[in-house]
Image (cartoon, rainbow, N blue to C red; front, side, top):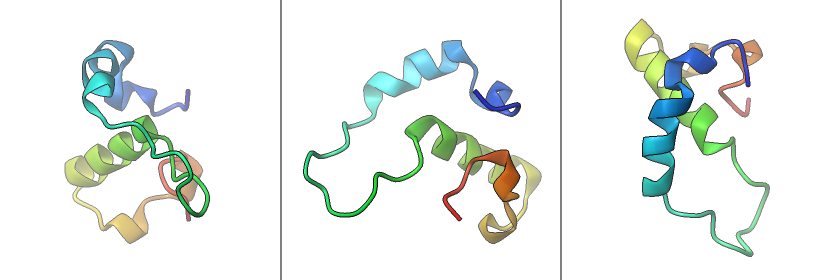
Length: 64
């Protein structure tokens, strides 16, 4: 886990993860950022009121 894992802690993730659809088998291209990191990035952007493009890559939330 990243240093920012507190945004979506284990208890919250245990509630959310079963609600997400599985990644389709045979989808073209590389698999995107893991769902938990994606959600943490979305919540960070909303909470900090920053543009998605300004999300620091070193946080590990984006694919670049």
